[in-house]
Image (cartoon, rainbow, N blue to C red):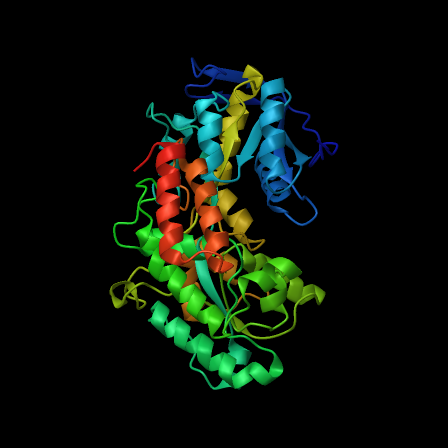
Length: 437
């Protein structure tokens, strides 16, 4: 796997450092004190287009001049986990590394590839999103969340006005969403505009079904809760209100291109897209238009309205410590995790349009002070208020189940298998391959 030469940040500290951590040491033992400047290494990916790693490294160094954080570039996408797993096994992994999703957490924690950071977690704000997701079966925490994206509804205010359709107001159920998608498509079909765009990921259907479905349980082996969400997606596809699954896959369409170039008026997507859309509008890769963020539509009216808490989904992104880190660096590594998941890290991330795990009024104010971010009250509400449930509940069988459900997704959305038949087949496979149900 390709590695890029570490990028050193800031000036090398010249004065001695003394850091004392409670419960430090590579084996989680007694207190550790490190004297002198410390250099930590941090794994990241796509450094040119993903600035969050360098941002955290720079902000931490500014607050702690005696600690330098070198960002090491790893491959992006699924190749990241492959490369990281290999380097951890070889003893060449960075001191601190990112857990891109909860599925990987089980692999790392069960493989003793993460240092116990329960002491760090114990000092974090309990309101930090995803904080409880990194607790293993032994009751110890092995990572901290530093960002927590949640799925919301992006919408194009200009296209809504052009179609004469009322904008989302926070009260929408999926029925309202369907109607708006069909009305916009009918009004703007001559311009090649669809009412909405549902990307071809399984998350775009299954994530909402798992979060909002009554008694939905990924590990139950019963996937009947998926059926109404697939029937809705297929109906929109058949009505021409969204691009069909086959066209997306064959033509390798991107959600950034479909929404950013105003080919679709709505886009269910994670909050990470905010930073991308701002950057693409500034660079000219996306059209200039007025847009907003609304809560994702709800299963029923009980969780709609700005006096309620909308239910959505999203996995936290975490940071963990390589257990083979030099013992003299443990205190600094733990302090970096506390910084990244705390108020200072949250402010630094919000300043570049990233949704931090810790969100409060001050962080929200920083985020919405960015040029290009919509300033309306509904967008602020959608960004800051939601009951975000995990897409990948932590369990040893989660990865197996998700692979099976990804096959279900392709079969249903391509039209090769009816919904009920695909649901039944998935349940049988989960029982035989994962021992669930």
